[in-house]
Image (cartoon, rainbow, N blue to C red; front, side):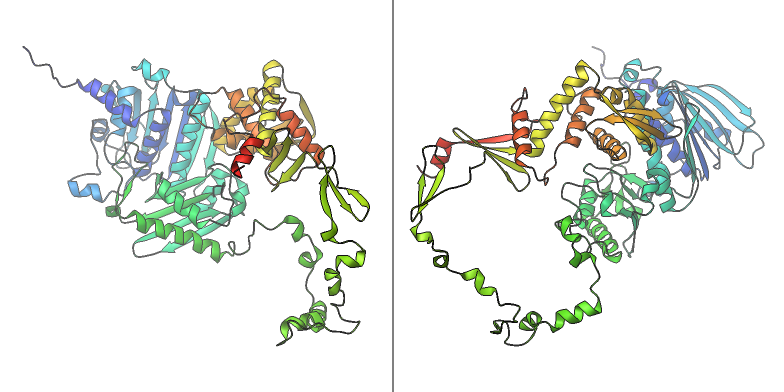
Amino acid sequence: MSDIIQLLPDNIANQIAAGEVIQRPGSAVKELLENAVDAGATKIKLIINDAGKALVQVIDNGKGMSAADARMAFERHATSKIRNIEDLFRIKTMGFRGEALASIAAVAQVEIKTRRAQDELGAYLEIENSKIIKEEACVAPEGTSISMKNLFFNVPARRNFLKSNASEMRQIVEEFTRVSMAFPDIFFSLTSNGQEVFHLEAGSGKQRIVQILGNSYNAKLVSVSEDTDYMNITGFIGKPDTARKTRGDQYFFVNSRFIKSAYLNHAVNAAFEGIIPKDSFPSYVLYIDLDPAQIDINVHPTKQEIKFEDEKIIYAFVQAAVKHALAQFSIAPSLDFSLNADIQGLDAVSKPFTGERQQAAVSSNLYKTFSQKHQAHLIEPNEKSELKHWKDFFKSSEESGKSVADTEIKYDESGMVVLEDAGNKLKAPEFSQYMQMHNAFIIVTTGSGFMLVHQQLAHERILYEKYSEAAHSQQIPTQKSLFPVTLELVGSDAVLLNELLPELQSIGYQIDPFGQNSFVVQGTPADVIAGDEKHSIEMLIEQYKHFSSDVKFSKREKLIRCMSKQHSIKTGQQLEQKEMAALTESLFACKTPNVTPNGSPTFLEFKEDYLNRMFGR
């Protein structure tokens, strides 16, 4: 019987290994950009065609390679970064395992032009299926230009699993953003299908953040800077008004490498505790520098997850650095989210406390009763006393000729409360069927008990069925804007909005592209308040980006769910009797009144027999 275990051929082994590193065009973008950074480039250009499926090209002005090095770079585990095992614990570069170019060459057609400064001619190579099919000398500028064409051309099954162009382009922009944000001193540009999406001049960290995330962040960033013997933390956190209901702009870099860490994210959230609402997420871009020997970056194929030698120390330092920054800029003490906005508008708060007013207050008798010794219970007997009416609070009911003790509680035939006393019959105000509690819940009486309706979730269900019926049967009417609003978005959001334009039109939005990353809002659904168009669209995009991916919904379904959540009556909004009645009646006119589109209950019912059991009756 012959042996059945055999070594895989190199081309198959390479494709399997490539699947770990190159999962989509964005993965190749990350690897190629990091290689350009390691080459010492000061200018890096990324060119994309067909969302990276047809072409991903990176051009840099780094140190280039010799012809022999260019050939060797595409061999598996060929690297200039590792000489012995100790080097693994002193990694300071982005790439080091020698897998990226070999993996790309296994699943795409690759062309490379490269030249060192000391060479007159450069080297040109064409590689397909991990094999060099063409090699020659060529004229080339100093640096390297590498093109990856027709990704997964030799693995059709994997190509079929790629997502839409817009989705893949978002991933590319995300990877480009992470690398360019980690190295603000390098020029980066991104061109997609002949149109320049990003043009990022070299500058400071704050300039790079504003270039990528938008000018709105310019005045909303608080710098973080903590230097210790163990580690250094620099970067910026967003002021509380940049916090979002969904995870927004959050970036951690360790030794200039982007990482994902729920543990460190919790440290930042803990520092913001009490400053932003509990269901909001802060924005931050933080750079951590520490000894490479204290971390292990070789635990994940994409190197986005790393292990710290002592996570607790890192957690404590991050939390302390963010808290220090908030305190240093006097942000933490000045915020009180529980303070009613109406109170801030009162004269006593808004007007200055002048010296004249201060003197009048200090000289008053009322002030003295609280400031002088043994005066806390003093009540002046004269008529001029500011407390002369204090006895009015304690007038007995006998003075009005009515005694509470003489009052008997009875009920009329309809079950309403009737108060009887001394021959007078006073009918209590008719008990309302609707009562709001904590500006969040509506108590509705029923024949068999009562129901507790959550006003926001109930309205969400109502709007969902309204939007869903209109969108699937006919287009939701658009309310034209008298003065169209110009909307400027960051690159990734602009790509997403372009993808959603047809679906947005079907639900009442009329938005036209207006140059690079800019749009003109010509109209919105009738539910959007005039002047709130820009915020409405920004929130819609933000909710859509972080929509649950557990279940596959169509774009239109996702947008309808996002709209119903966004436009619903929020917790904290006071409702009139008519509004509570209309909301409750509309809820029970729905096809599925008991749950929201996401499955949360809209109301709870308490029946009379259940209430009796609670009281042991």
